[in-house]
Every structure is written in C-alpha cells, then in structure tokens.
Amino acid sequence: MMMREEIKRPPIVGVADIGLKTDSLDSARKFYSGILGLQEAFNIHKPGSKGPLLVAFKVNDHQYVEIYPSLKSDSEDRLVHVAFETTNAEQLRRYLGAKGVKVPEKLEPRLDHNLGFSVTDPEGRHIEFVQYVAGSLQEKTFGKFMPASRISTHMIHTGFIVKSSAGEDRFYHDILGFKEFWHGGMTDTRVDWIDMRVPDGKDWLEYMQNVKDPENPHTRGVLNHLALGVPDANAAYQELLKRGLLQYNPKQEKPKIGRDGKWQLNLYDPNLTRVELMEPKPVEKPCCSPMLD
Image (cartoon, rainbow, N blue to C red; front, side, top):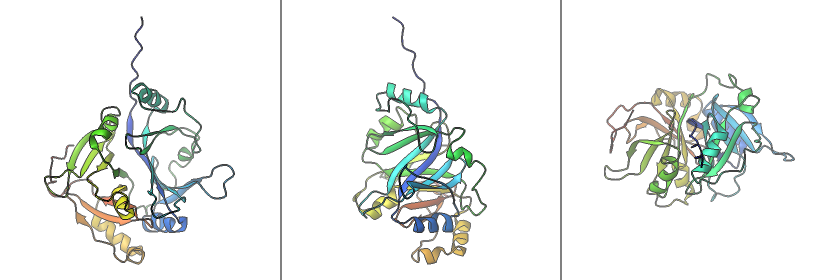
C-alpha cells in the first residue's frame, strides 16, 4: 500500500490584519486616520448592502486595520478576527485539515479577491489566513496610501484574551509552529502574557491570561488589542499631541516602560480597543523570562 505523502505547512510570515467593530465610522476615521495617520485604502461592500461591510486602514502593503461598522451593543466583543499572511493558502488549508482542524472544503471566493480561509481556534476565536494575489484589493493598492504621516509602518503584534494557554498551544504551537519568545506578568511569579512568534517572520500573537472580568467592555478593549511598532515612543507621543491627542482623549496617559523593558504608549480607539505603540528593543531588562531573539 502506498503511503500518503505528508502535507508540509507552508510559511506563515506575519500578521495580515485585525478586524474590529465600531458603532461610528466617522469616529473611527478621526482616530485611525486623523490621529494615527493611517490612510483609508479601500472599503468592501456586500452585494445589495447600503453601507460598507468594512473599511481598511493601511499600515503597509501587507498589513491593515479593518473596521466593521457593526457594533450594536456595548456588551459586544469588538474583536472580529485576526488574520495571518501565508504564502500558500490552499496548501495551508490542506495541511490544517490533515491535522484535524475543521477547514472549508475548498477555498471560496473572497470579497477582497485574495486566496484565503477562516477557522476557529480552540477557544472559538475567528482566525483567518490570507495569501495576497494579483488583482486583489490589497495588491491594487501596493505602493499607495502610505503617507509619511503614518505614526507607524508596521503592526508588530496582536493579542487577545486566552483562558488556557495549553489549549491554545495545541493549535498555535503544535500545529501552526508559533514559538514562544517571551512571557511575563504583573508580578515576577505570574504569567499573564505569552508572546508567540509566527513561524516564518517577526510578528507575534500575545496570549492575555488570568483575566478576572473578561466580559467587561473596558477589560476586553485593553486585552484584545493591536500593537504598532515605533522607533521612539516619546517622539511619537509628541507628534500625536500636535495632532490633537489630548482633545481626542483628555485622560491620555504618557509613554512608559513596560514589564518587557520596552517603551510603550497606550492609546484607545473610540470603542475602547487598545492600540499600543511599542519600541522594538528593551531599554531595561525584561521581567520574568529571557527575551529570545
């Protein structure tokens, strides 16, 4: 009997986008474009719909913040999905299926005209995998909609609430090949955050653990978040002040050094989702565990 050839996992190279809900596109535009300087690259409509399904704010040619004007209640989770870029969506679909992950029977047409598919992780998070192809909405904007006013040119990580790191590891680590490169906590004896790097790039997914009140909208907004890399968090803060940051949020906090030893600045969009501006390297020794290269 012939042995079936094992399907190899294709590269997963980074964070592609994060999808977030809002109850006001105008307010979202004021924050993501007016404050952060991310330009609106395109929007997607469902056939027959009056308004857009989503509006895409561009970080770079391969990364977007997608805003869905679908928030109806303050109790709803703002996080719609996290998407990762792969070099071969069909091979990844077959690989995951062979590993027992529930996947679509085939790649279906996408409204952005890329190749890709969606799965749910062990805790029910909506995870997408996308392969950018010629003719897609993203490919048509390559080299465009990237003004110098962008406060960042790279989304370095996304994070969300995790109940069981062991359960999530069976998917992200064992099957997908994500690797832990740092963990830390509010104290040296707790593990509240685990940073899991994509297998074929530098971006990462952050498990947010030990959450006391996960249904609280503010708590979810803090923990279900994205991070934009900046070379200098204090310089970024001064630039944002010039753009009216304190008028947008009079209670805006100042930059600080986090438990990972890096300078960071926490911002919040109109619906409470945290947008973290983070420097690339620690300036102090990180707590709790070594930070691997």
